[in-house]
Image 1: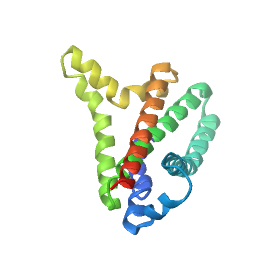
Image 2 (image 1 turned 180 degrees about the horizontal axis):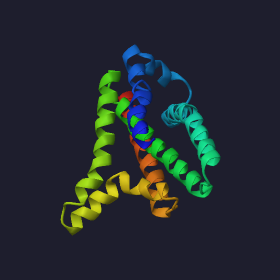
Image 3 (image 1 turned 90 degrees about the vertical axis):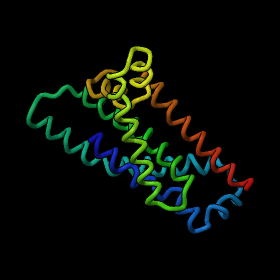
Image 4 (image 1 turned 180 degrees about the vertical axis):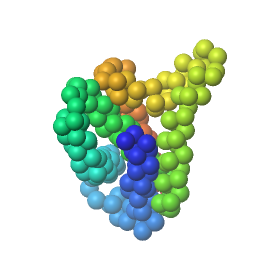
Length: 183
């Protein structure tokens, strides 16, 4: 499911702001008496809720099938899906950020996919580097942070990583939108 998220997320986020820029409705949106932060959080939540509508039926069906044919550890399953939700939030925040820079939705989707794939692969690259660099690369990569969730472990370092990643990219997206106001 995590690879599906890697593929679906760029398609969900590619139109969030790039389409607004292409159609010229972003300028109209900026005249509404709401802040850029409210616009970005609304776009983020819309994409996140849409993703949840896509993924929840698959999650429920898979969990029911596991329950019927086996004796699963539901705590591990819930933790794994919690990690999937956090991963989706991270990916959506990156996609929203990329979408704020272009008016071409295909470019936004491709750049988002490349960044997400790079974030996925960078952890593997870290395994082949010397000690100080390997720690940095493995920490920055997505894979190691979501592996503990898949194992049913909740590590506060991984929670902080995900939340700070989302907040950081939403902050950058707000700044990107604010900079358009001054151009």
